[in-house]
Image (tube, rainbow, N blue to C red):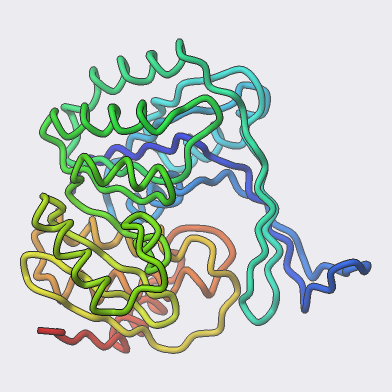
Length: 311
């Protein structure tokens, strides 16, 4: 299996509160609460580990509440390359209603100074060559500019590593200037990054064609409960997941990305890769937390995924 580096520049402690129906302005009774050390790159790392890969995790962690992250890293057997910074890693509260709707309350996180940014760049230069791919996922912490972020991506691509990018807003726009190997936006994120207002399907397809012509080899367009479209050298494939009972949509996109990367690095056919990735994402919404916990359920979901060519 492959050795994969994941970068989570702005990780979080996720407190997920399960509710029947959120009633703003009133007292709400929770059905349960769970806490996870999380962040998009760490979520991806957990799925990759369950698929058999060796994973190095890096980014920035606040020193004041580092214990839950170190426990996760130890439990999962990850190689720890995080740079510790003063302050607390942010805390995010996720209000998960029974119908699957999620309300996010995201904290600000620590301020990352120039010295720690330089430390991360130097560290990555030392360790990147020992990996087969790198995943850069999530938002930017305070103190990190989009210019610095684009420079980070340029360094990684210059090292010869395939770079899979999953972010949004200004960070995605900056990232697209580097033409990463793979991106995984949803329709709204892609439209914003390409400065399209209320785009049609045809306009989105044209924008994706432009990105691919500029060097983005794979565009995995996440469509939530409608599945995903994958634009790549194979053409365009659409995958539709089976209906499942939704516990939380948190981590579904991260699971989709991780399993797609698994198939690509395993040299699987595109249809097989997308089928598994869609099934792993569908399984993710049935649970609170991250990773592949029920192989039999996954096999049933995979058999029920519909994959068709759009060309």
